Length: 296
Image (cartoon, rainbow, N blue to C red; front, top):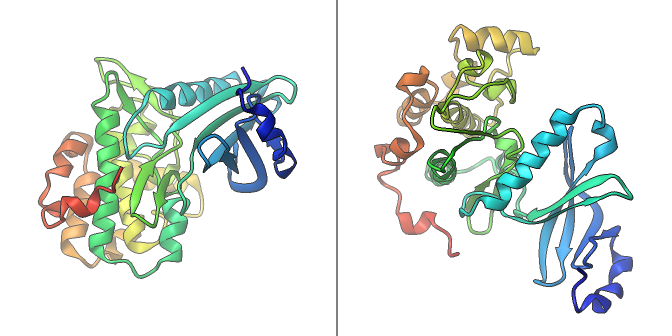
């Protein structure tokens, strides 16, 4: 139902490229990001007076691929149930039959994704990287200890987002996440090859695939280089990953403590520590927890 103050919003409608059915959210035409499945626009919540992200999927593009639509539906259902300071919040969702789009409003992180943010800020202390890493692990711990367990399956620096003014990091893009039951076994291959754990290719894996991907994210944060960038195609990446050849970027990590921590994360599945175990690691022992947790 439209908001009682809908008429107030009508005066502002001309500022927006599109307004949601209630008149509360207005979408601007400028893009925050664009992927193979959805476009993300800058938008505004007129009720709360805050900027938000308007995620839009053109359903007709995927009318012959119900798997994609199912995956998006699962992302939205997942997001709506998750409440954690290190997971992107979902505010609203609706389907626009007239324009054949699926739309959902999420919080926006002011500084964009971690890949772009790190590229923009080339001089960052290891202490700062540890703070970002700890928050990613806190988000993963929440997902992995959720009942049922949630595996992200596509964690990489382009779908980790940051509010740079307070150093707050959040995991987003849960569209490939798998909810698994007591068996903790999940099947189907999805993800970004450079970050995919070798067992993902075997379609028999646990939440430990996210720990591997996290290790690759930390490697990228350290080197500002996407892992396996020495490979010019996916087949070469697959061969290296499945035969246990580490990315060349690991040799560029000169800090022995960081290198050892990354290698723990990308070890064989049974040897990888859980997110909870990694949070207790001495790697984070010198961090002041008061500095890491932003004010809610």
